[in-house]
Length: 282
Image 1 (cartoon, rainbow, N blue to C red):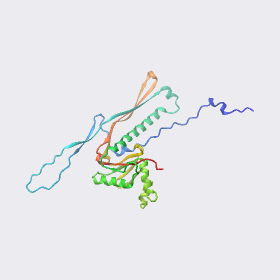
Image 2 (image 1 turned 120 degrees about the horizontal axis):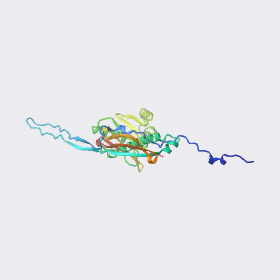
Image 3 (image 1 turned 45 degrees about the vertical axis):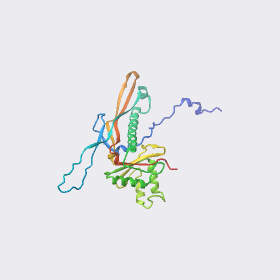
Image 4 (image 1 turned 180 degrees about the horizontal axis):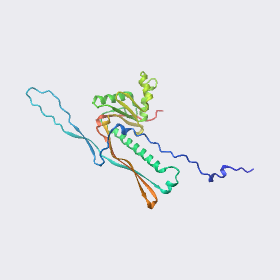
């Protein structure tokens, strides 16, 4: 008996394709926690200066007060750069692809540029000068977080503060508070709040926690930070934009994407580094 089988016609049958998936992208979180400048479209550097401090002191009757110089010194500089990418789609590709590939390119580019901006801001944490808590190859603890909060308060840094951590740094803090026999186990209300608002939480007075995978991990460690929004800056000179251009000789559509911005520390003493392991505990 001869059977009629799928294997006999397999080469003649079309594959079944579902909708295409996008590559995974991190949410744009960190740019919303820093000072943002958007009013200038030139490419000239933006500079911050710092006034000298007043010198309040007692003086004797009849004495002449010596004037205090009230001058400015350069504090920081933001130098903008241009960032771009390009995709060229042939007319045949657009006409034949079952996906709306032009719209999908725009979505991917928007997500990619947003993630890139957050990664650049996270890289600036290493340049904060207000102090450092935690050590490489050791887990961050709530003691480190509280000390960072106290250090900013003692330095007269105005609140609110943001505490930005890698997901695995945050996980170790949550586990230390939630698991029996570890930190803060006698504070059930704190534990409840920690679990209920796992990824973005305001748990300590004036501090909002932000958890972002855009923070780079190097040698199993990451540098997070606690900071005032004045500590870091994002300086957008031209917003993310798409400029399509026809290339008739190639029968193709050229999609050009760009974003002009600068970034960096703005008042670096208004933030502290939080250094610790950023690996998934075994």
